[in-house]
Length: 228
Image (cartoon, rainbow, N blue to C red; front, side, top):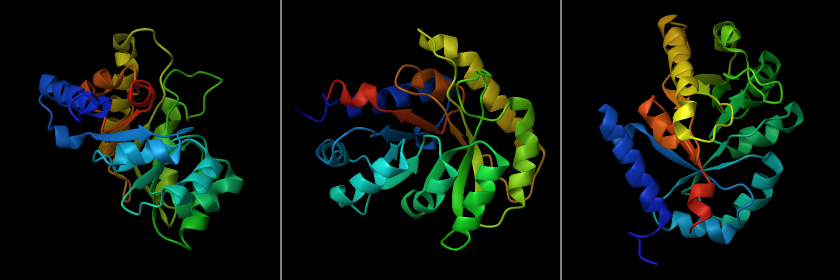
């Protein structure tokens, strides 16, 4: 298969086109390839095409798999829920944690990270207020950001969300717009030590809409691997 026909190139082109529609620089959006359940061979094949940022959902799977890939040029994010008893391993493995949704979890990350290295994190916001999903309620996000700002060893760098499931990409737009608005509100508060540079939102079905609404990190797995 040629590089032109590989789904990775198609996804990159679609990100670029989405940026063009709203006047954004494509360099402001990073593709996060979700590699959960994928084999080391599949991951290496995607990395060989120039992709360096990957994400896993579970700490244990990442801990077992990443050494088998044995590529120090790759960067790994955790995008799934993090249990407090897995924080030490998560801090050692990942460059960013996307799903911090409570002060208790942030405190544990701070405690572990302070001994190892500063840990960039994103706050997960439950924009749809779905009881089955993790995430802080939108109205509580500012207070949590203020509390996290005082913790050593942890750096809040933005927000993350998984919106309610929608059959059509366009239906997700209000949720992405809400998260972007929340980011602007927290940024306007001018909290020392808190950056809102990142918006982690958009997956295989709706990432183009997410880019149009300001996403800086789009998390794509099935659209890449299903047709590779």
